[in-house]
Image 1 (cartoon, rainbow, N blue to C red):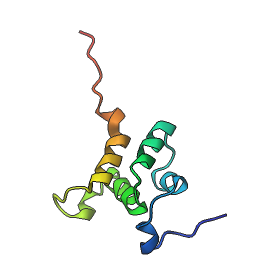
Image 2 (tube, helix red, strand yellow):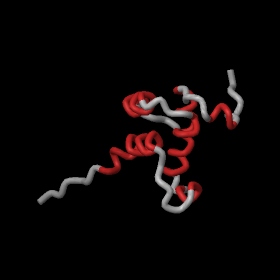
Image 3 (cartoon, rainbow, N blue to C red):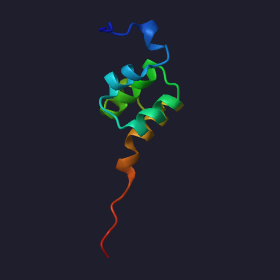
Length: 88
């Protein structure tokens, strides 16, 4: 069954696994489970996606991310934050 694009009302509903995958793309199972444990709305997932795409200015200058959105971003960027060890 093909799902219609989310309406404004739908975007405030809790996100389903297929919606998270649709917005964020392919995720490893651990990250997907961590995100779903947050019980994000579709809007939360969409905001995290926009922020990760570098379009954070869409939200307004210096506007902090909502806690759930921030946690989603942290989950998705956790691997990027690890610094490679030097061979010294």
